[in-house]
View 1 (cartoon, rainbow, N blue to C red):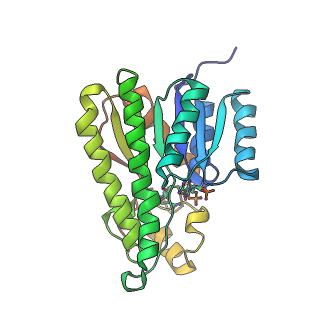
View 2: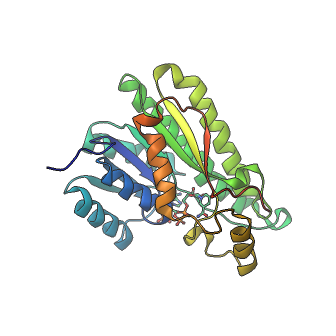
Amino acid sequence: MTTPGTMQDKVVVVTGGSRGIGRAIVLAAATAGARVAFCARKLGPATDEVITQVESLAGKHRALAVAADVAIESDVEELFDAVVDRFGRVDVVVNNAGINRDALLVHTTTEAFDDVIATNLTGAFLVCRRAVREFLAQGGGGRIVSISSLSQHGATSQAAYAASKGGLLGLTRTIAKEYGHKSVVANLVTVGYVETELTQHFDEGLRRLLLEATPLRRNAKPEEIAAAVLFLASARAGYINGEAVSATGGLGEVA
Ligand code: NDP
């Protein structure tokens, strides 16, 4: 007999679960006993692989992959409709989907700025709004964890990304204040630097700078970010609300 996990049978929804940090969160949640739904803009070999891994970790019918762009309201509604249809409820929502289009302010096009805000901030708003509606319809409770970045404080070449992550902080704290009385909890994990597709374009100089400025002198593994997310998603973090918890290896603001 297997020991029940810390998230036994909870229904966890992760946006952007096909690779990188989101994929690690999906696998960590499945390992902790949760039933997991995740989205990406396109389904394909990467999402199939995540489903296969969840099934080998947790058994069949424990995972659901949905093609959904979080920047599109109808996609977000369809994602949650599919989750409720399959699993009957929603307990935890992880806003992980994120993109960047890094450039100095004067070279940032309006289109690039809008794209980043649409996914990272409007997407998180659409997901949070539907999630909270679900939580309230279930009688309260429910946890939201959103993935932010040290860039939330402002970062060179990241006007759009920094604005989106700073906005996420305001959104999260607002949810914490508005719905705490219904036992809805919302927090952020502030991430430093993880090697993923998102950071592939960083040049050697920036990578060295980040590494040297990180007291632990190494980058985070996606699994280490997932561990922080799982803690905030669990009942053990019951009294943490409206907080930004850092998983940065001690890295502060560097650029
Ligand atoms: P990746 O690029 O590796 O993964 C991003 C995931 O999000 C993919 O599954 C992607 O799938 C999905 N995604 C992107 N846009 C959308 C969208 N509009 N709708 C639905 N899904 C989408 O990035 P990371 O794993 O590095 O980043 C995950 C989160 O962590 C982001 O919010 C990022 O800002 C944050 N973060 C990352 C850091 C790092 O160093 N890597 C540092 C600080 C924060 P698809 O493209 O198929 O849609």
